[in-house]
Every structure is written in C-alpha cells, then in structure tokens.
Image (cartoon, rainbow over all chains, first blue to last red; front, side):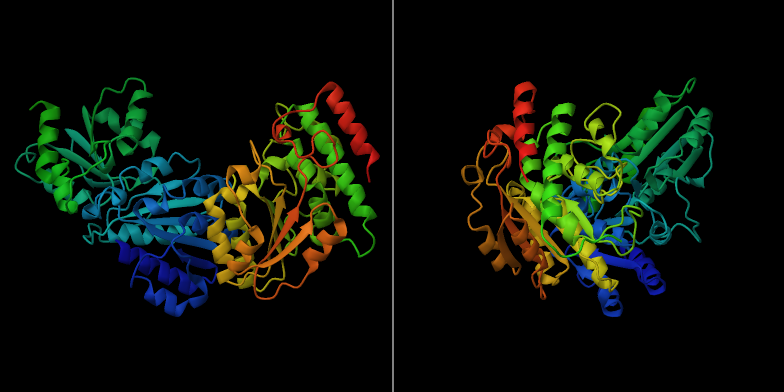
Length: 305
Length: 276
C-alpha cells in the first residue's frame, strides 16, 4: 500500500510541477527516486511534524499542492492543532499521509500503535479521512486527493494484497465486494483480508453476507447506508482502530438518527485502552480479536446462532 | 499596489496614534481583553504598513503583495484597525469588534475580514506558516517578503523553534520575524515565568540575522526592516512597553485582560489623543 501511494505520488509529481513532498525524516529508502528526480520538490523538514504542517500550509497558500508524510501518530496527534487551525481552517490543499495504521508497527510499542489517529483527525471540519484497503485504492486515492482542495488524511499500512482488478476512486463510494441477504459487514483498511477469510470460513459459510469495503472514515455516504440497512437485521463493522470513534461509531449515528431502521450493530474494533502487549500486527490482531476466527466467532455470537 | 515613499515618519506616527485610539475604543466598546498587547505593537504595525509592506486594499489576493502574519493573534484589534485605516474596509465597522454577529473575533481571523492573511490565536503557529510562504515564494522565484509579528512570551512555545531552525537551514532571507519584546506575558514578566535569556544570542546561534531596536522608535524600526538580509532570515527584536501610551497601563500585566471602562477609558483616551 505504501509503495503504491509512493508510485502515485511520483507519477503525479512528474506531470505537475506544483506538487511538493515533505517528510518529517521518515521513509528511509522509500522516496529515493522522488528525491533524485525532483530535488527541488522533496524536502525532509527534519523531525518536526508541527513545523511540517505549518510549512505545508504556507506552501499551499502560495499555490502548491502539498503531501506531508510521517508515520502513525506523528502525522496526526503530534501536529493536531496545526492540522486544525492552519491547514484545515485555511482550506489548504494538503494530503497528510500517515504510514503504519493500527498495529502495523505492533512491536514498537504504545507510541507506535495508531488506534485513535483517524477518529481524532476526522473530528476536524472538512477533513477527508481515507483508509485504503489495497494498493490500487491507495494509488487512486493519492492521485485524486491532489486534485481536491482541503485537507485529506491518508491512513496506510503495509499490506500488499490486491482485491481489485481495476478501481475507480470516488469519494464516499462504498465498494460492494460480495452481495448477500442475511447480514451486512462494513470494513476499511487491510483488515478486509481477515474479514474475507472469516466470510469464507466454515463457521460463516451458511450465512448470506454482504461485504462492503468502505475505504473512508469520513465522509460516509449516509443516504446510501440509510437505504441499505433497511434490508438487514444485522450490520457488523470491522476495523483496525479504536472501537470508539471509527466507522462503527459513524454507522451507529446513522442507525440512531434514522426512523424505522430495525438493524442491530456489532462493532469489531480495538478496545479503547493502552495496549502493553508486545507483538507483530498478526499477533496483536489475534490477541485483540481481529483475526479471522475471532471475527467469525463474534459474528456468530452476535447473531445468536 | 501601495507602498509609501521615503520621508519623515509623520504618516506612520499618525497611523500608530490612530491604531492605539481605535484599539482602545474597540476593546472598551466590545468588552474585550488585550489592550496592552495592542498598544505594544502599534508602532511596529504602523511602520510596517505605512512604509514597508506592499499591499493592495482593492485586491487582497494581489500576486505581488507581501504577506503579514500576526502570530500573536490576541492583538487582533490593532491589526483590524491598521487594515481599516489603510482602506481594506470602512473604519466605521471597527465599532462592531467583539460584538455578537460581528466579523471581528478577538483573535485575528481571515474568514471575513479583508486584508487579514492568516488566522491565529493559538501561539506558536505563525512562524511555520510564514516559513512555508517564504519557501514557496523562493521556489516560484517571486520577490515577495513575509513578515511575522510574534511576542516574546510566545517564544515559550516549542513549535517556534522548529521553523527557526528550518528557516536558517533553508536560507529564507525573505522571511522577517519581529518579536514584540515587552517582557511581560499573561501573568508575570517573561523572566519570572520562563526566562528567555539573551534572545538575540539564541537567534544568532540558530543562524539568523538579528537586529535589536526600540520598538516605539519609527526610524529604528524602519531601518531594521530595510537592513541587508543576506542568505539568512532576519529577526528584529523590538523592545517595547506593554500598554505603551497610557501611563497606568504601561508595564502592568493587568491590562493583558482588563477592559478599560468609564473613568479608565476616558483617561486612557485623553492620553492617547494627546500623543503623536
């Protein structure tokens, strides 16, 4: 996912001199070609995320489209007020790219667990928050975001599995991966691979499932979901982010504010606690209930089967 | 484009006097704080806008204009007054400052006020944005300057020291920071609160050109703004008096918050009207 975002950026920079890339001293080896081919438009600002967003704001106000890169919480929480007051309030064309979503950097510990970032950033008015599920989605999101005014937050992990043959990116567009009639599962980010494994597992094989790759935490297509959820008794949101404030919470809002919607919601996310366990992404996903077996089990229990 | 010609400082002194009177009227009428901060920067704003900054009140997006950022956004009343007096909008609007339904928030906002380039209010944001503008102009080979007015107390914010390093590293000699050094912050003196030490020496060590001036002396401010700025950003450390021009407000942190009412207002207005 990260390489494909990088390729999209490289190709866009090749065709447009108005794109500048900033990194807060991260991405060792990843951006070498960008630095080499566009030395004037690659700036390593140093380990200074607040300054990076302030600079991005100023650069954007001189007409540049800016991509600002760091990892995990550094690109979001560390510079949150700069994102809010400077970049977003002044409607600057800035794409903030945060690599290392969820438990990507699991073993590195609490500081590197990006579990609240997107939920917090999405509270800022006007900011688009995208959590691509596959390399193709990340590629097309990057290309599209450069053309859009305002602040975009692109939350990436390191998955390289591709689900789409071709992908036409559209803001808010839910992608139906699978159609069914019993339950509806929504997800975003690379955890979709675990969801797919769960959906095709023995435990769930007799249930008719709709699976939607939502790709966005904000905006979400409220009208679409109001309509869609009329058809289901159960909706499940699976995401590698705090269970408070993610897509699950957004769907809860839709359900709670829509008349005559008789659908029950199960949020499968990460418990909103500091996690002190050490382990890689696979280990922590399993430990906190996001492996295929846990996902299936939670769905079965939820449906009371 | 407007940029005043060389000459004596009568014009800037009259502007400074008007900024002070307006700021007092605006804060007293609106019931807002920060009159001390406004009086502190009136001379700096007056010299900048009457002699240095290139601006166009008829086209706020003029592509040759310089950029001014009031990083100490709490002194918004002084900037609103400056812009109104230079023709960006009608001075009669200033009486709406801080009122319900007005366009003038206490901390400076660009949202609806013509001529305000950038909204601030949380300290330690302006210099990074200024550095971004300055870098953008350099990359586009545009001869435009960026002026960022900060306060000495604001230098407590660590986020300032990131662009201070960055601007020197990238030789942003089109970036000019002005520090309104009135030695007072919200509650007590800067020395008592978080001692800044020798601010000039710090900036020098960080690779900046440093000029120190009397922040109420127009000729000194003017010369400092014009001084050569080779290969490095420039900081003008302007020693000022918080509350300058109103004897009972001078050097008293109370006037960071207090609104002058009744007798206080009358006395302050008399003092400000008497001065040029």
